[in-house]
Image 1 (cartoon, rainbow, N blue to C red):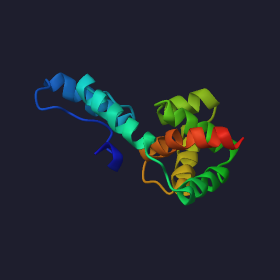
Image 2: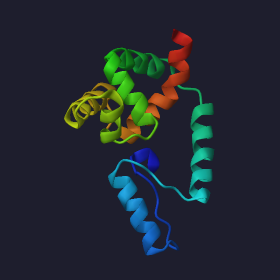
Image 3: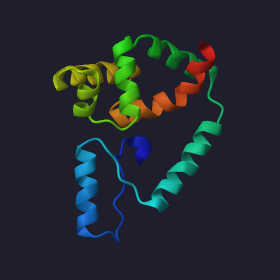
Length: 133
């Protein structure tokens, strides 16, 4: 479900308080994940990153990242660190609306549906970008 854009998981045995914390975190574009779920996610991420991606995919992603402005790249890095729009605005000393515009442009340029997908694409692409420089 994470690959489809889910912000996290709520387990059946969690208390109402734990569920509320997770819902608030998801609303703020943060995620609180149970250790058992985190372990499963790390395993899946390991599987995905060890898989060989087709060169056409890598080249397409490289060109998409090249379309991002330096400011959009900064915003994407902060998204990847789990920052909310307001936190990004504070960090970059801009209005929250400006950050929302940058996020919209990033999603469009990377052809993804949400900030979680953008962060995933960034994390997968990061080693490729480092070797290309």
